[in-house]
Amino acid sequence: LKPPSRLKWEGHGVRPRFGAPCRCDGFVRRVAAMTNGGSRPRFVRLKITILKANNLKGADYKLRGPPTSDPYATAWVLDRPNTEIRTKVIRETINPVWNYHGVMDRCRHGEPIEFAVWDKDKVGTDDLLGRVMLDFDSFYPYGFEGTLTLEETGKKVSTIEVSIEVIPPEKDNAEDRCRCWVMIERAENLKGADFGGKSSDPYVQVRASGKKGIMRTKVIPKTTNPEWNEEDEVPGYELGDDLEFVVYDWDRGSEDDELGKLTLSATQFTPDGFRGTLPLKKKGNLTFAVELEMPLPPKQNDPAEHITSEHRNPAPFQLRCMDTGRTHRLACWTVVGRSARHLDPRYDLVLDSPGNEDVARTDHCLIKCWSGADPASWRARVYNFHQVGRGVGFGAGGGHSAGGTSVDNQPVVDEWGVELVPGSVLRFGVREMWVVEKAVLYQKSRVGEAAAARARINSTEEPGSIRELRVPSTACNNALQHCSDWDSLVRVVLEWCGEPDEPPCCDAIEVLDECGTRSGRWEALTLEEQEAFDMHAILREVRMGCTLRLRLSSDPYLLAPIIGKVEKHNKVMEELHTTRGAELFGGFG
Image (cartoon, rainbow, N blue to C red):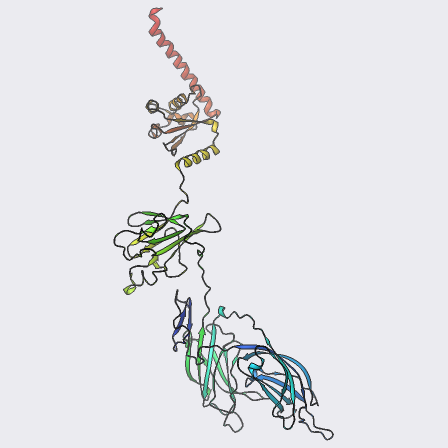
């Protein structure tokens, strides 16, 4: 059975009419009309000691000597033979000593215990030597120990010494299982099974089909129309079991006679219970009621109950309005409402757009965020304490009733909130729709981010091989923009760094913008790649204020051809210098 998500007590302890559900949080209790005023029967376990009896009457006569008996004692809850305990038989004595210890498992509250002494006969029924009744209040809750005077002893004054100890109850996990209660009210027109066929001593047994446990009523003596009005739990019942009812006639000393029986299928009383009169096989009718108690589901605790209004630290979540694109950074405690005067816009989400009058002013809903055992794992929940019964699904025809809060089109009604994950769509009232997104926990400064980037690069590159040039002027920028190949760009950078004699052996060039963020990175690991490289990819990122980073290489496969190229270039430049000098100054020789 699927319980409703959230309900409150209705009736405040007043027993509902037949067939009506009595509702509580997370629990549905189906009731068939019982007649016990709403209380459940209680039972106690007793440890009973029967020590001895004195001055019993003699039931067995002898040719010589006074009469004697073969006595044994019994104890039972009055008219409940299934609770009977019995001592052993002591032969030929009127002062027997038994020292018997027994346990009576189910003594119903308020019902007396009867002690009786019998004379055992080999033929015929046993003779009663005396009996006495002990009221429930005489031994509960503190027990009893003493001597009782027997009645129905003839002219003898007979006594019996007994003691009763109340055994503390064991813990019952009744809340973890389905329970079935049966009220046996009455039977009519039963078969007469006693001598003469005019009466019986009827009682009823109830059991779940296939189970050993039995519920049993008391015996009503000498009637064919008994009234029990007795309620008890069916032991061993499991949801879906049928119930078997059998009416017996009780006989002391012989097997009980069956008077009638019937079977109630589970579909007849699940889940709303049953009350009515059904015919018994053989003869007669039985009036009874059945009630089921479903187990309470585990109580769900709020995982964010430790978060209070004092927790205003930032959380790694933000809300983005699906209409305007506006974003709001969530705090660990974020209240949603319309009033910027009563809320704190630094932490709380203020919905001040026109047309959202169905959003509460100060406490429409609450969003809590917190970190788990792992500081890197965060969770979020939304709570809707003051808008229950409004919003999605509460309007006419299952539509929107205005107000309320929903997550992914499901209303927030549970007092422990609804989990939020990135991508969840929150709806406040009718118009306000926001989506949950991840956000960085702490915003990094641009300087710190650039420093961290340089540290990451230095962790994989040799710092001594790096040359950096921050373009200082228009002249430097113009010189760089006129570079036609990789080699000339490297030479210009080294000259502006004050290292014109450094071999231009560079296998990587990186450009950083004015804030230190990488704009691009290019590699050319061989001389052929460098000569074929398209410089427009680099030069369009170069501007005044940017930074060029060169990674110088000592790889001999690159360094050797570069040095050869440099020597060839220097030889060409020397020849050009000599030729131009001769042209300029040759006439003055």
